[in-house]
Amino acid sequence: MSGLTSEPSESVDPGSSAPAGAAPPAVIVLAAGGGTRMKSAKSKLLHEVAGHPLLSYALAAATQIQPQEIVVVVGHQRDQVQAHLAEIAPHVRTAVQEEQLGTGHAVQCGLAALSDLDRLPNEIVVTYGDVPMLTGETLLDLVEDHRSQRAGVTVLTAVVADPTGYGRVVRDADGGVTGIVEHRDADDEVRSITEINSGIYVFDSAVLVAGLDGLTADNDQGELYLTDVLTHARSAGRTVAGHLIDDAWQTEGINDRVQLSAMSAEMNRRILVGWMRAGVTVQDPATTWVHASVDLAPDVTLLPGTSLEGATSVGAGATIGPEVSLKDVEVGEGATVVRTHGELSVIGPGAEVGPYARLRPGTRLGVKGKIGTFVETKNARIGDRSKVPHQSYVGDAEIGVGVNVGAGVIFANYDGVTKSTTVVGDYSFVGSNAVLAAPLTVGAGAFVAAGSTITGDVDPGDLGVARGQQRNIRGWVLRKRAGTKIATAAQDALDAAAEDRSAQSGPDDR
Ligand code: UD1
Ligand code: CA
Image (cartoon, rainbow, N blue to C red):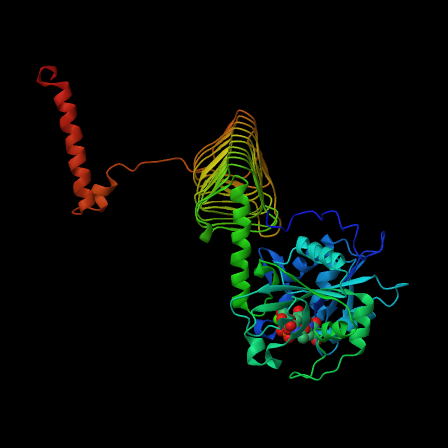
């Protein structure tokens, strides 16, 4: 699938530089930057791709390498970031970087948060909080490569069409990495290099500590550059390895909302490709959006304009769309959902929903049930084979099996103060345009007459009628609307009926 759901694989090459049984690495996630180009009151790291905040992807990837510790270095808008972390990943440590003095300084802050450990893990993995496509598999490969090359540092790199702004990976004739030069510090020759530094690395922790100690802010930005640790490692005689990946998206950071939407589209494309390979028909991938957390069965069909979010799941053979958005909705096998908006609801196997239905939280539609055109439901259990086909509001209802709810029926659940429940028993029939003013119970096998406003219980087998008697005032139109088209039509119809009667009775009968 998209790589978001894959399990961590068995860890390392036994011939690696790490001693057998060595403690796993620590991961430091850099996330203190300002994200000013987002122009948002919300931290950049909490903006979402495919339904999950950017930061949660960084944590998911880090978690897959089963690290000893994860430290997130926070700074800008850290209250928001820390609150989010406390909610989704209370086990991670945070380190505060008060002032953003550079990536090297950020890692110093991260290491300080590990100072209570008896000893540092042998390896420190550094990643960014704003690189959502990076997978745990890639981090595992990176660590494995680092170990098999017995490197002091291994940097994740990619070749990109436009490397502007990135640090460039400078290699010697043998392909060894000699260092990383920032775009703004680079001459034309270095700028012509298209292999870029992703900013994701594995460090031997001793190499990292020594390199950070030696950092100076001797560069165009006056910052402490983490990349200078690589130069330091190389002069100390350690191998600096470059781990090049083909999938450059995995190194792509998000800085603004244009990149956010491009990343969302690519993530969605990958999710849909995964589902199509797993047996789902997606008629129009360009207008179909499926979040990473959604689960689809084989032979599901998604029609144009479908958006599936949260913990939504769709059973085998169901058809969703066109124009459907579902969030946290469970759709049963073989159901059809057309032009519908649904949240926190269950749609039973073989059920039909829409077009133009709105399922609010707590809707549970049974097997082969129907919620039809312009129907709104809320906290409503609608039993197997029961139907609410047209223009109804069904709020706070317990409807049995095989019930027919006529067109325009309103379950009036709110008296202005409290909400109450309406119960409708099995196989009852509620006539069109009835109002059921809760609380009340319509028994099993009962009838409610069309147009009734029902305010009390209707017992099983009874017919509830609550409406004015019909009364026709003979000749009213001819008297009160004489000379109008209405009156003419009435007179013509009356004359025709009279002629019919006389033709039927015949002259002989007189
Ligand atoms: C950095 C790398 C560059 C690489 C690029 C990849 C350095 C000196 N340069 O560039 O080689 O190609 O990433 O995107 O490392 N951060 C902090 N605290 C700081 C500074 C940064 O936490 O003081 C975090 C940011 O939130 C961000 C990450 O580190 O997640 C990278 O920062 P950014 O300013 O984007 O790095 P660049 O200078 O663009
Ligand atoms: Ca960046």
